[in-house]
Image (cartoon, rainbow, N blue to C red; front, top):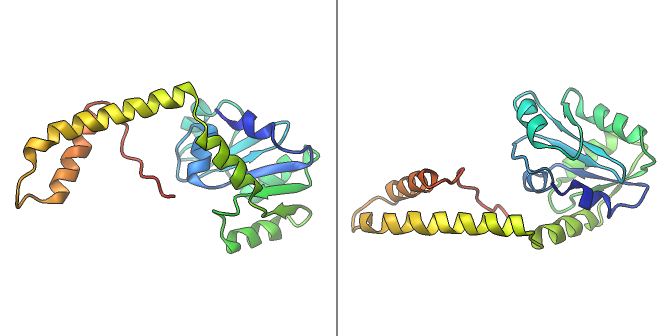
Length: 184
């Protein structure tokens, strides 16, 4: 989906390591609770575990999809096939523990924690394509219709949880895939 756009912004010696759920979704178009996306100027890969491998192979089209075995070794092997010496990380989303583990497992690479990757990702995510705008409009239309259907059910003494469940049900019935909350 947006991997080539990111790759075009990398220097020839840089790779981008994307671990956050929201950026994996944005760049691959594939939603999962597990995955590692490595993007280099030439290529990259999406690495995920056996729960998601088949669906990821169908959904992720810009880079190869690999079954996760030993993720640090897999990333190392991928980096050996390019001229990258520096790895950009999601400084706003990566913990120090995660960063230290990656540094320990890939000691020959420098890790760029300057927020450059976060700035790039956030900039890409702020600018919407026509397809993204259409999806947002469809989601808004579904939410409005479901809320209109819900209004007659709201009464004093009613449980908020029941209304939330009913709203979720009606949104799904109208075509929503589910509720995705923005965690940022």
